[in-house]
Length: 106
Image (cartoon, rainbow, N blue to C red; front, side, top):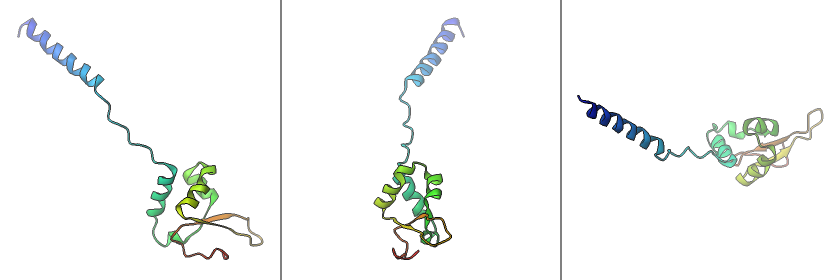
């Protein structure tokens, strides 16, 4: 192999490296919106877990964005209820759209 062949090999390697560097990068997957994240979580729950109410502390820890969770849950079809019984903290619980819960009882 003479010097010109080696130079052509190096040039072709450099051209490939340059092309790879300037090639369009594959798009990163689009992050899920909070609504999509909540829907995916709820849809993957077993049916018996869908009958449980979740309090806001749990939902905040699970999804973050506390000021946005309530309106999104309402939009999806969740029902919110407060536990006003004595001796308990007056927590708001959220029940999913598939939950068989009466709004007057908790």
